[in-house]
Image (cartoon, rainbow, N blue to C red; front, side, top):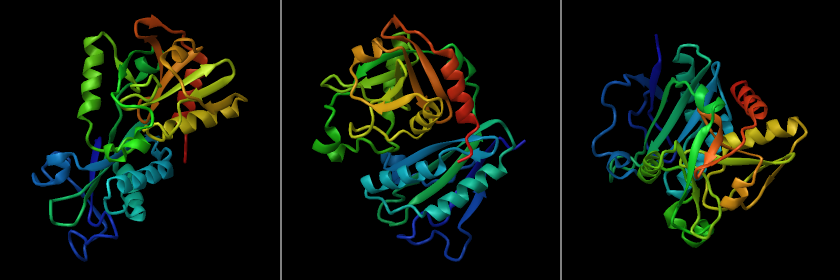
Amino acid sequence: MTRDVLTILNRPSRDAAAHLPGAPAWHFADPQSAQVSALDLGATRGDGIFETISVGDGFPQALEHHLRRFVKSAAALELPEPDLDAWRAAILATIAELDPVAESFVKTVLTRGIEGDGRPTGWAYGAVSGDFTEQRTRGIRVVMLDRGYRRDVEQSSPWLLAGAKTLSYAINRAAVREAVRRGADDVIFVSSDGVVLEGPTSTVVFRRGDTLLSPGTGLGILDGTTQANVFRYAQSLGLETAFELATPQTLLAADAVWLVSSVRLAAPVRELDGQKLAIDAVLTAGMNEYLRALRD
């Protein structure tokens, strides 16, 4: 049974030299053995980027959107531009090597490499997804936490890398641990000036009547790949979609709220800051069926 696969890229960027001149563009490696140097800046400083791509029945979902975001994050960190042809081939090879299952994922990682070497490190790791049935059906409990900066941080302080998907996830993991201490499962970040942002690993989506809404970009948050596909699904049903600045009270007054992301997909929020919310079970089931069946 092949339940996880590691694919190492020889030359993650055309802007830097290959690690092994003349060798193939990528090769499989043992996921259980050491592959990255202890001096790699991804390990020592979290200096790198990543994407996590859902795979449904062997098909990557929103692959090109993920790759575009990968390039955007690299530019924000001034990393060598990813060679998308090489990355795409490595991702597809990783998927093909996995056992055929209904749901899996591939995580792509690009680091600055060893300090002073000038060659970035890159790999794709694929594995079978966990079981998220309970989160998708029963829903999740969420708390709202202050992220500690204003909604305009992306413009006022670009060096904080808001909106880039970096390896520096210590704060996001600490936020989830704080949620658990408060008896919840996940978090929605709010800016210091009171605007709803995103989850540590997800995008916020909410319904008001026949309209599906999300906070949108330009707030120092990620351009959500799963949110974009959820909007496409809603439009196929004849629902309106829009981006809107939201406050905590906006979410508490909504007809339904979700945290949507790759792998877990659409998880309805059943409790927000201790207040029970209604779950739109029919729309949630439709979202997840649509996301699992994507072939783009």
